[in-house]
Image 1: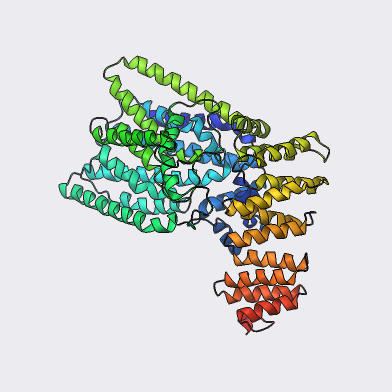
Image 2: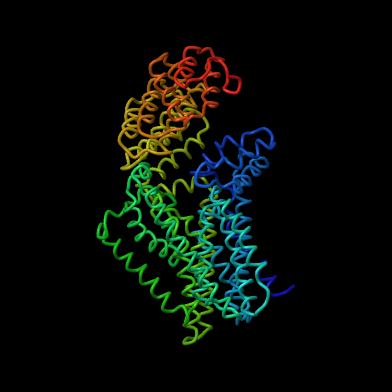
Length: 609
């Protein structure tokens, strides 16, 4: 077998081996709403309508049909056994490692295609990316298949792009390979919006390794013009979209403003860089819901310091792009990888998986500097240092994977290393509940205590109180009045968004399934929710039905039905369907109210008027 083939097999096998201990872990965080409680996955058959529901089951952004379909297939094969989902995700990551290996072979060969001076170097760089311990919380976090599949597309497009550009440098026919980048990129956009960064990654290649070169000077000029147009279009889009995504309404779901978010990223990106360069046990917390935003350049002062560091990095890359092109490329790719998630978009402040591609940039930058130093130092020493670093990364990855493979160990570690995180505390409490064998199990008491601790933490969402109420209802324990008081107070006073909506709707769903939860308190919760955020019309309708059936409160029900009409945006077919449901379930007066207020013919669906 060719040396490159053997090296590729070693990269693939090592990437698999490093994560094997983590396959026994459980679902975590966003895995639950997107997989475990995903209604589209509960369909009995995969007919055309079922597949359509699956493809469009991710409700945010432009949708992510490809990963949702892959998760649905896993659901058909494995049910709700996390092992199969994690195994699929690991195989995707190992395939990405092969793509990184192919990419680093191209990059180390240079524009002229000359083989790298040491054939094992591309494999070493690919492996360093694949087994970095920071990758564990992307590879073993099932829902982040969206990120890994999008990156697969980006890596494939970059390989096609480099192949085409090298052919142009040699004066050969290149456009078929370059055009293939478009459908490959389209597949990436169907996985996650971060695939849209491909043009920026390609631009970094031109600034460093490729230099806008071509056998024809005319072709080189065209590339410069093309990237100037792309850059102008990108900047224009950023400016035009800013009012929409920085508006007060867009940030109503966050406890910080758009300005504070952008300032905070000046601290976050250097922190990411430190995580990659100096991985240490316990520094990866997974939950960062307690991370404080920057209120100004000097609040805290590390905001300004971080901004200066990022400017110096960018300046050094520009200055050294000819002398040390791989260093400059690596810095460019690291910064480019965060252009979307560190922008003004109303996203959370910190997530580890945002570094999945960015780690490759740091690996290339470190290698570029090390190779430059190799001209002045003993290469055997550098090789030995690289071997030690690789062994350290593998051991760290193996250790962290093992932690992720034990649900209780992971929950305890996350809570102990991050006691200020309400999410970490809730995760531990949820784990205790799952481990409990009966209502009198010691784990139940431990869960209640941890929920109460998490609920009292500054900035905690109402999720711990939700956990307490559900736990009490399922074990026959009394619900403490202060749990409901705290939940309602948070709904009334804190930033409110999808998380808070999920708390209320989940309690209502469980009540409708027969769980003994106070109907009056549920109504108090959804009244607050309906007054503070815009909901889908069907959700107002569900609240109205509960008010009518469970409380016998026709006035409250009609108020909620009016909100249903107001937010239906003229969808008379939907309103007719809802009124028909009320008639079928013995609520003709409520149906008549909707029909009168919406101007519908009484008693018949819109299509039969």
